[in-house]
Amino acid sequence: MAYAGAIFADACLKGLNGVPDVVECSFVQSTVTELPFFASKVRLGKNGVEEVMGLGPLFDYEQAGLESLKPELKA
Image 1 (cartoon, rainbow, N blue to C red):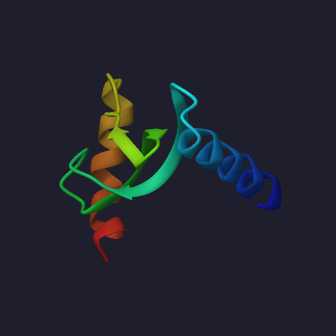
Image 2: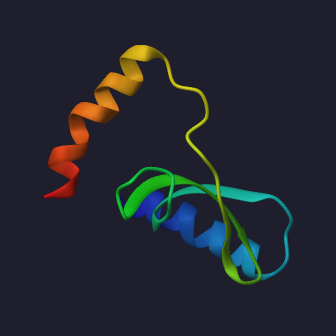
């Protein structure tokens, strides 16, 4: 956890300093799913999170797994 936190903090600092195309995963408010918050790839920049990237194409079994988890994630 500490290592992941250090990597994310470093990415945040790079983005805030104007380094282009800094992409990390983060639990953010988004419209990627109907859930209000979801872990997604984000592009970091001078204003913090500048873009929330989508999930991309999912295989049928991945989509089924996501759908089966949504009720638990809403709780």
